[in-house]
Every structure is written in structure tokens, then in C-alpha cells.
Image 1: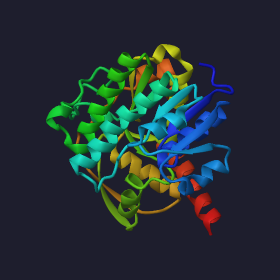
Image 2 (image 1 turned 90 degrees about the vertical axis):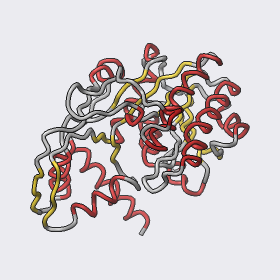
Image 3 (image 1 turned 45 degrees about the horizontal axis):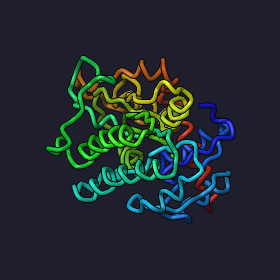
Length: 304
């Protein structure tokens, strides 16, 4: 799909990843409609040229109205909260919400969809071989992996099922541990971890990925019609938590002592197919964190 002057709706647009997706789509030449629960929290996107529409994931009719006239939809909204492990809340938002989004896409005539899944839907294991696009999914029906991961696995299955039933073309993206500006999950905890003059950090492989690079892969998926029907791991660099911590200090221009804890294993990931087919490229942690810190500073300055 040529995105120039096409209209693309993004659910959860005012969230951390949603804002990056809106900006990446705008930069590609698309008209963007941000679909959010709270219009007031999304006014910053409106000032950037994003049209806003109000709809909750539970409101199928409102979603249909929001998607009407759109050429594509990015199904991004979901419940991801490290403090909310309740099955009912995750099930309602992640599975039932996804089903509502897809039925609304069909009703509105928006036949091209990118579904933001998660690398958490895969069965993780320590050490090689690396997790890739072919790694089996968790058994969400048996609640394997906990409420978030299980319901995200079920939601990805539902996305492809409804697509087959309703004639939609879906690409699923499975991001790793996302970091970026305005993040309320990973970044606040890591900031606390890095605050003391001495921090103990494991040399455990873990695939962090910059939100801007995930957003770019959304654009790449929409541009490549052949990606429909495929699921891609966009899971970050094959480096360690210690590497991320070192990059954090360098990007923040801070001095501290990091004490490495040898682990010698971790979760390896292989996103090479996403790189070949939808242009996924995960920038260095230092560059991603510098952009993150600069964006957070700019937002604080604008709010003061």
C-alpha cells in the first residue's frame, strides 16, 4: 500500500507506542486518525496534525464509526500494566477488545490491519536456539505465561481468525521489551535502578526494542502487501540487560558504577525476516535512549 494521503486509524493512539506509530505514519505521508478513550489525553497528537476519534475497545459501534473511511487500521490498544495481573481485565481488553476492533474493521470497510501483538506470545526459553517467527505460541486457553501473555496469544489467534472469516488482510508484529518516551512500565523502574551511584546488573540476554523502530515496522508492514497473513518478531538486539544499563548511563551522560552479575544465558531473538521483508532495523541502545530522554525533556518543558 502506498501510504501517501491514505487514512490510517490507530487505536490506543495516546499511549506510549501509539504516539510513535502516529508520528511514523504521518512522516510516511498518511493521514492519521487516533482512536482513544480520552480525547483530552490525546490533544498533543491533535496539535501534531492527528485527527481524533473517541472509542473504547468495548464499544464496537463507536469503533466502527471511528474506522469508517479508513484505508487501514493499526490495532494497537491493549492492556499492558505490570501491576494489573487480573485475568478478567486482561481478557476483556486484549481478547474481547481485539475481536471488537476486527469486527468493526469489517463493518467499516477497512480491510488492511496491522495487529500489535507481543513477543510474550511465544514460548520463551533460555539459551539458543533463538526465538523467531516460527517459535510456537503459548497455550493461552490454559493461561500459560500469565494473564497478559496468555490473553495476547489468544488475541493474535483471534485477529487472524476474524481476518479469515471477514476477508481482512492482517500482519501481526511481536515487539520485544519496548522502551521509549512517555513509558509508564519499563522506564520508571529502570530509572530507579540506575539512580544510585552503584548498581548490580545481570549480564542476561534480553531483547529491548525502541518504540520508534517498532513504529517504523508498522509502516513497513503496511507498505508491503505481501506481509499480510504473516507474523513478525520485532524483538530487539541480541544483547544483555547490562549492555542496556551501560547505554542508559552513556545516553544520560551520567557516571555510576555498574557491577556485572555473570549469568551466561538469556533469551536470544532473531528478527532477520522482519528486517528483510518490512524493513525492521533496531538502532543502538545509546541512540534509542538519547532520543527517549530528549523527548521526555521536551514534553516536561512544554508542560511547565
